[in-house]
Image 1 (cartoon, one colour):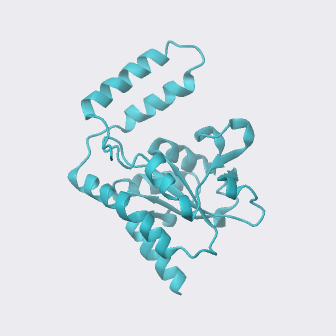
Image 2: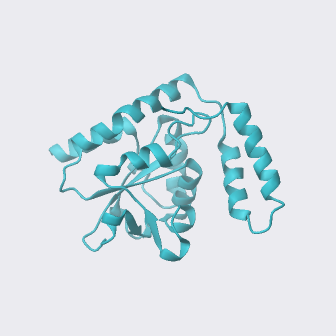
Length: 207
């Protein structure tokens, strides 16, 4: 069963309570910062955005499986919109904005066969009270030995720009994601909505 997220007012009240609570709890600054970031981006979803996201939830992975050749080593890193801002403004994909142990120096990825995890678990695709997050499409190198374990070493997107193939998000986010990319020294031409990414990838592979 698909869940379409909390009622907007309920989610807003919940986040306000979380911020108030965790501000008073020692050593919970990170948890508090996440609640504050969610509260910052919280808004009522539009019919257009909701319809677009439902369609991507249903079709995007099918399109990835049909389009990406098995020998093309693309990896996918999905994250919420507030984490995407941190990655782009800093110009790096690194553990402190992700779910992996900070000391590992690695972040979580998916490959073609399990890309549905990046879409469905990590970018708030069905929480319509929040803007959808982003999927970073990354080119794996031969020395990336842990790809099969769904891990990759931290990447400086400014010094290794060719590793970043694309940043995929919803039409609602295109302007702000391009702005963040520019701040972080990342080519804003790599920002696509889901449909345009598939079309561009199909053309690139065909030519």
